[in-house]
Image (cartoon, rainbow, N blue to C red):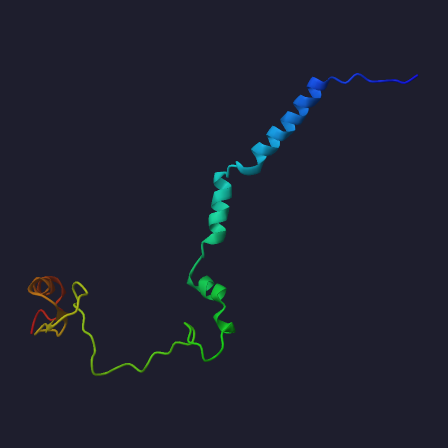
Length: 122
C-alpha cells in the first residue's frame, strides 16, 4: 500500500507567486539611504589638490610630456613690474607725494590721506 500525502495546490501556487513577487521587487527598485549616498559621494569627490595630483599619476608620464609638476617659470622680469593700490588692491597709477605708497583713484587717495599715510609731518 502506498502512502500519499495530500498537498494543497492553492498554497503551493501562492508560495511560488510570493517568491516571484519578492524577486521582482528586489531586482531594480532598491532605494539608497542618505548614508549610502553620502558614502558614494565621498568616494567620488577628491579631497584636495595634492590628492588630485597623486590620482593623476603624473610621475609615470614620459619626461618629454609637459605636466603640472614639470612646468617651469622663467626668471622674474624687472622691466614690467605691476603696482597695486594700497587701499583697494587694484592696479595703481599714482603715488603719494609724502610717503610713496600707491593708490588708484581720487577716492583711494582721500582714504589714504585720512588713515594710511605714514608721514603726517614732513
